[in-house]
Amino acid sequence: MITRHLVDVHVLLTRRDEILLSLRRSGDEFDARWHLPAGKLEAGEPAALGAVREAREEVGVEIAPADLRLVHTAHVVSPSRDARLGLFFHTERWRGTPENREPDKSYELRWFPLDALPDDLIRYPALGIRGWRTGVSYSDFGWPE
Image (cartoon, rainbow, N blue to C red):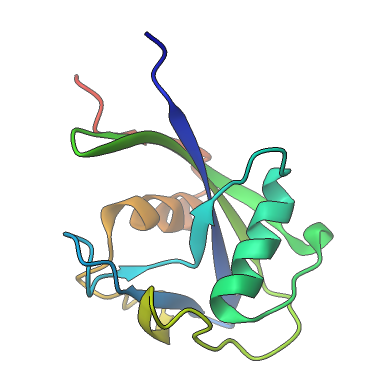
């Protein structure tokens, strides 16, 4: 039996010493917890273009693929969700003003100081943010020891 591993793309939009987070509206254990703009890669879609698409769909900004830098990869498993490989892209360059373009999936967007991230930040995006800030390119989470 082949186990499916989804590919997620996450976008770390930063300005000065702040990062943009989304308060998820999901109806599950992640409801009302903070996350990065992110989503699943679509079939046949290159990862950088998927990150560009997710940023446009979720927060309404336009990013040139060349302005994205892959900063972290996380391989995550959980008993309640499909296994996934998360690709975290960072940029400080985009066009437009971030706004909540998916109010059915997000209560709000908010800028947070990098040194004062919210306590209710979901562990998965926290791995990517920490990896980016420390220069660690890979992490895994949820695997048996």
